[in-house]
Length: 451
Ligand code: PLP
Image (cartoon, rainbow, N blue to C red; front, side, top):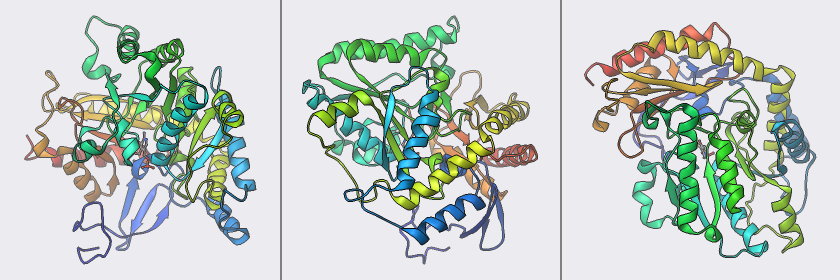
């Protein structure tokens, strides 16, 4: 499509290929070119692009009923999806607290709901001074103003800074850059988690409502998992000060790490959990916020009304699609494939790029993997942002029929460009060399002229 397009594209005037169909992990454009989707768009398309069972479920739902407003009705697909999320996913978290599901249309809506619920909970629990939100400098929670205000992505925040509500940002868990040589991963995790304790004490615990974080940082980090023990310490600190823990699994949740909820592997239950992306696998736009009985009961016995809502809450077609996605993942044991192929892809990345002079770090969990690109491996110095290396890699990868998710450095000016891979859970061993070879070609081409 040329700039004569009437669509206000993300990058107005840019020429985008026209996507017309899907074939498993491949996307096909109007010229018949095939793109191997190694990032699920933005970690969305976890079943690829042509799942027959999901498409049939959506068609059948539209034939029966396409929409019913949530202020008037509930629906079977919405009830069944909520039940699935609690009994099949949340129930696997050790000491699980999550028992209720609020169904929205995407990740930013889940963030807005989570922040407002945290505030309303404290109002109704008789602690009206609690309103502050603490987040991390390396984080992304969405692009709406509330979500942006708690996010730490400086590039996304900068133009809107005067419009953002105040939030406090603490150190991320970013071992590649911040762990000291004489420190174990665990010791490092405890040290940075303790920044939360100090910050809550400084602000005054009676003013703090919640701490929000991604268990695996996605868009702002290039797949940076918290080190073992970090989230458990965070959980203890939140409990000590009566602060709610909101985990944002919009990107890393719904199976991407090889577990339906990433926090289950960390052994930590939040009070509020956000999910989206993989929930509907892109077949329908859907997200959700899960919360504890304590929060839910406080609202029920208090005002009896969550002062929030959108037109498409619990959209029946989206719920039917998401339910089919989740049943397919369970029926075909795709989480086992995520773990197996995730390990194989990581090993292949390490073999191809482990000694690369401009790949500083290879990291991630399951099928959410990242490479951090640096100008100098010894000093970890990033490339000059003006080079826009990540954008070059994206362009070169697309020219080679590969979709990967690139981002520039966005925290404290000391982070390198990074590339994230989040291929579908149906990935086979035959796709791995194709991803790695095309990525290597794209990186070499992008580095030409950048160094
Ligand atoms: N939270 C995280 C961790 C995300 O990665 C994203 C999107 O990339 C969002 C929230 C926002 O989700 P959405 O783009 O669906 O609004």
